[in-house]
Length: 383
Image 1: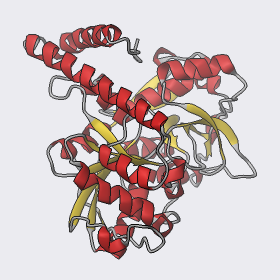
Image 2 (image 1 turned 90 degrees about the vertical axis):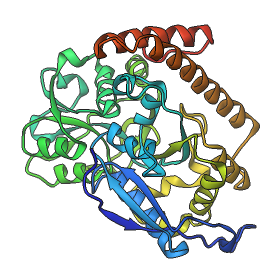
Image 3 (image 1 turned 180 degrees about the horizontal axis):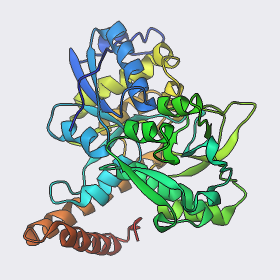
Image 4 (image 1 turned 180 degrees about the vertical axis):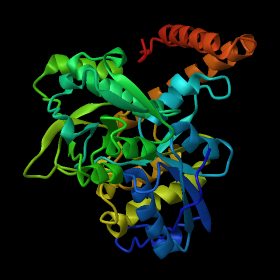
């Protein structure tokens, strides 16, 4: 499920200009973090943060590469890793949908440490030699999917929904991992795949004979954006100014959501999470230029009203940084209530339907899940 152990990085905190000094922040001697494959934006940012932790606190951070969302979360659930550099997969895991609706998973009580929102966007990158310049032209083309990664697959479907396309309108090509998918596009086994614009594999495609293009999602097209957000509620319009084939001089209208977003399980104590987030906030200048997109981890650049709650330990650190309001707390509390509703619904359903086959089990769970959320007057998100 996991690839080989790759990177060592570490954590420490300066904080001389803060009320809390470096010596007041105590980090564990070692820490494991999962991320997508080597060279991806999530992996590179995790390594950059880890290097800061090593330099400042002599904490060794092992960055474990994994090809899909299930593989990234399995070490956290098993207690072999503390956090994961996730994306929208953290939302799907919280909701218990797609692969996380399987018997061995169910809704996962994930909580946020910090998330990255920078100059990059997240969209479907397309091999330039296809001649495609608009989303609608993906009809009939080969769209990469990653087995066990509902985030990537659903994100791709959300983007093509901009043009009214669905999975039936493209030729899905499945790959074993994120890295394999992008290698497949370079090798002409697929034409397009979802990514953040600053990911290493997108750069590889840009520099390959095929080249890369990001068909725009014009923000003025309100109907197109309504279709995007119906499939991917976590997307918001943004102007991407950095990434493969993108610059401040050649920006592209597309969408984004926090990525990577460092998450952990709610079972982790605030005493364990607070110093980690505090260290990341105090030492921001030490890693912000360490990898493309790392600058988006600043406390004042957080997406405060996203779809997964902040961990209480992170909330404490954010409050001390002056970046937490009563309104933020109200939103966070609502997300915790949502997790409680999903947890209770799963406990009742899974126990009563353990004998069902996987397909029938998932279908029944989605019905039970929708009913529980409706009863709590909460949106489904996956009609």
